[in-house]
Amino acid sequence: METTKGKVSFYITAVAYLLFNLRLAQDMMGTIQATLWQILQTAPYVVGITCVAVAIVQYMAEGEKVPWPQRFRLFFTIGIFAGLVYAIYEYTGAGIPQ
Image (cartoon, rainbow, N blue to C red; front, side):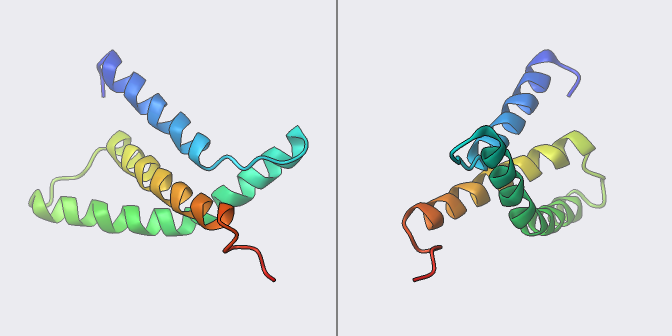
């Protein structure tokens, strides 16, 4: 990730992760709290899936370690998908108890 293109794409992925996990509220403080709660709810699952994916990639590469920037990029990508699925679940009303 020494190239500028690699750094830019890394930061874009991180911002997209935050954007997909963004939860809007009436005010800024409520938005920040809801977003942090969303990230805290999905983080354990995303970390677990990322660990399994990294283990599979390392196994396929005959034990060669995956660099940390690529691990974070994989975490952000899986987190984007988790945030999207959870947002669809919430916005369709399935997450609201009746």
